[in-house]
Image 1: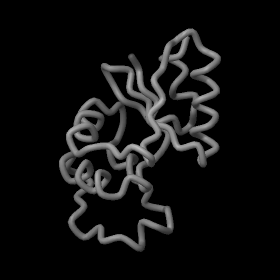
Image 2: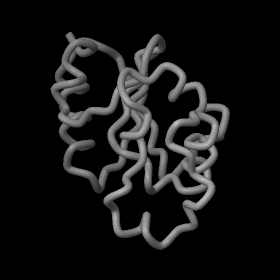
Image 3: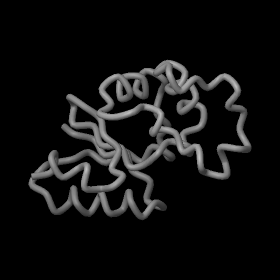
Length: 116
């Protein structure tokens, strides 16, 4: 079953949830801030990521400047997965995992090809 990694405080994520609810696709909603994602889960999501994995981290978020990102290598999926497993609030949102690939719903129209 497809999974929407959702943050209810994010307007884009709420919009993605609405698109999922209006579609004919059954989607499991995972509140990733409440139930943290493991390194292995994040690594798997990033391996199947449709796009530049660098966009998976919220580098423009003011919290990014407050955490130690000195070990973060944006060219290494393992490094990004490790960083996000320790700093889940800095994961770009929303993420949609179709089971075959992962996309970020920014803009949320990126999800339309999965939600018919």
